[in-house]
Image (cartoon, rainbow, N blue to C red):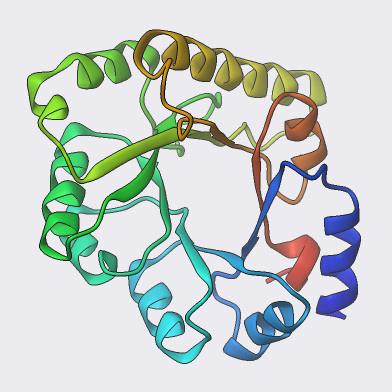
Length: 219
């Protein structure tokens, strides 16, 4: 079943869009089934769960931390996490840089923006992001590579509102690309879109979709 559902989702994605299978709370067997069907990018919300799964599954998996990240958890995954999606403060950037330096690697991250009309979501606004990117502290971070932006749309059935929020994130990406990363090919990712709205996200410029229930079924 997982393999069939995975193939259905994959068939709807343009070639340039990366599918992240959101595997939080799912058992190892489910992840293995998706892996056996060719899936290599998996997204987890909690560091501890990701660390435990990474020890039990093949080591060519690209692990994405997509949940809200606390600074005291960074050290546990610094050696292997592929991409950290939810970075929303200078303090967190400094900690990620420190832990990446210890394991001698450059850590890829996305800046998370607040685009929803809900209080439950995390993220920066454009002025906060510019303040970080302009700061001397940020410019001294040599073990971090900002690869793009991430955002979550409002949990609503109003497609016009969701599309507008996605367009907002695309505009933020374009602005940052032009102003701060014009020569960096690695600044190219827009992580937006989940099981209910990933096609709308792709239509509005998403390069990474985070899909869980459409692949693994509901929780």
